[in-house]
Amino acid sequence: MAKVIDGAALASSLRQEYAQRVSALTRRAGIRPGLAVILVGEDAASAVYVRNKVRACEAVGIRSVRLTRETSISTGELVALIESLNSDPEIHGILVQLPLPKHVDMTAVLEAISPEKDVDGFHLYNVGGLVVGKTVFSPCTPYGVCKLLESEHIPVEGQNVVVVGASNIVGKPMALMLMAKDATVAICHAKTRDLAQFTILADILVVAAGVPGLIVPQMVKTGAVVIDVGINRLSDGRIVGDVDFEGVSKKASYITPVPGGVGPMTVTMLLENTIASAERHTRQPAPVSEPA
Ligand code: L34
Image (tube, rainbow, N blue to C red):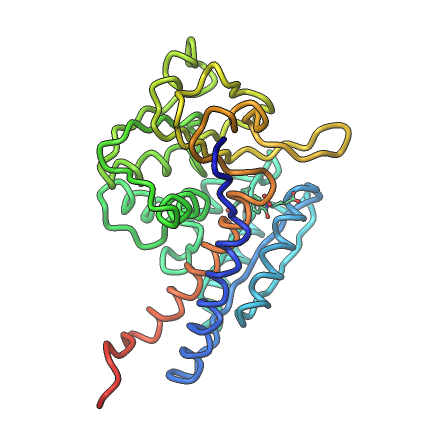
């Protein structure tokens, strides 16, 4: 039976550390990290995620500003809102919750965010940084997955990693981050023929496809580490990932649950990025050691 990786527990222990980092920053530099979260429209899942983010900010002492806008907002109006946040010295992080309504030019919106405040890591500058290994802000979901692997001391170097899903939010940055740790990475997606032929080779299988029940035990190597990034709401109200948790648990060595796995870590990495942004803003590195 696989060990279930408790993302909620790791998230809460990291948040205790972050609360101390926030109070140290306030003591040392008189700065309180500030995050602006922009939520457009009525997407129910987005509303839940944003609520979780705002609550998590409160719990560690980050000031959060939740800006909700109607679905009808134009690209220009969103860009103007972002520009005002770019020049607000009390805001260290700006996040536009995705997905945006179809009529909004997402690329234009993401490029409007100052790269120094882009705590999601979605601006082209930060995407490029990730590609060449000079990351400023790591995208929160794949960053959270890396922290989960580290916390369990799961080696990545030289391992076969298969990422299922090639989105800009999860799949692509995930592949880059694990490549940077010297894994052998394959990315599969909706057009991949015979998915099982790839997944069966994975020592570490990261699934972010948004298809409930996509990964069944026959597709998983015995002893594999299975990270389920999917969050699907079934018609009966249940929330499940992309992996047949019951079945795959019997074959894997580690598995993440949904909920309580990657989701809470996504939120937690946003806190870390926001604090790091505020720390950078002071341009004063923390003292390496206390004077005797
Ligand atoms: N800009 N858009 C932007 N940044 C992001 O990092 C996200 N993502 C994804 C969707 N859009 C985004 C999130 O915030 C997914 N995501 C996210 C955030 C929080 C949780 C899941 C996904 C989360 O809190 N999950 C809980 C359960 C939540 C529930 O009840 O539905 C969990 O335990 O998995």
